Amino acid sequence: MIKIIFTLAVLLFVQLNTAAANQVRLAVTSSFHNSGLSDYLIPHVETDLKLDIQLIVVGTGQAIKLGKNGDVDAILVHSKPDEEEFVKTGFAKYRRQIMFNDYVILGPLTDPAKIKLANSILDAFERLSKSKTKFVSRGDLSGTHKKEIEIWKKINFNPDTIGENYISVGSNMGKAINIAVAFDAYILSDRATWLNHQNKGNLAIQFEGDQLLHNQYSFLPISKKRHPHIKSTLVEKIEHWLVSEKSKKLINSYIIENKQVFTFNAN
Image 1 (cartoon, one colour):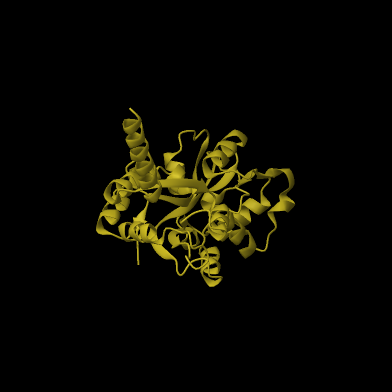
Image 2: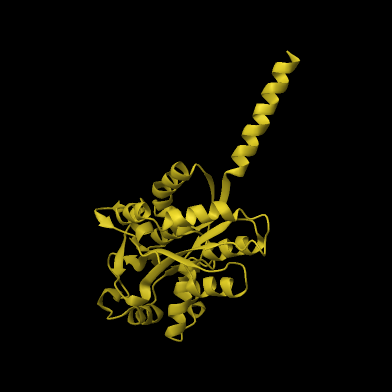
């Protein structure tokens, strides 16, 4: 009996250690998850590579912080200036482009700010700055929030001057859209999350199609020099999978409401 118990204990120990050895922690932007793409893509990665991928779903700003602290093995984010700074300061050797989608402005069906008539995203934000309509901001230093800030800066406008009509919520994309629905407000969103979102309320896409609304997602392996415990060999396998032909096929075939919402562009 003692030998059997000991044998079972050894087997359990080996299994637990094997599971831990095959586990990778990956911080991903909330839009990657809210869009449904993570649930579609990650099981294929796990099955093909025999890995257990632990997703930490946060905004880009928080994902970068987790990477800097060595709390994750890699990050998948969408804010190029922050990614380049992350590489420059030695937390990753490089950033690897994987795919892109685009941002859109959602707003009430009546479009009181008349942004549907805008000839550019800057014109649309100018109209929003002059209107007395509500605007919901992610307010969480995510990639989406950083893009919003970038556009406000390009028109030399501080949205805080809007007062109570500027609603900064500090939430992920899905929750922020729900708040915009509740307030019948405008909001900047990535297209995929919006199409995958169930609670659309009285909102619709009111502006789209500007080059400034390009939304690039990149994969950054955390530097082993910075954090020796990082599972760089497993991360490299994930990276190779993400830039593979199978990944390309899956990403390009991810459809919501009969629309392709991500485009593979790994370099």
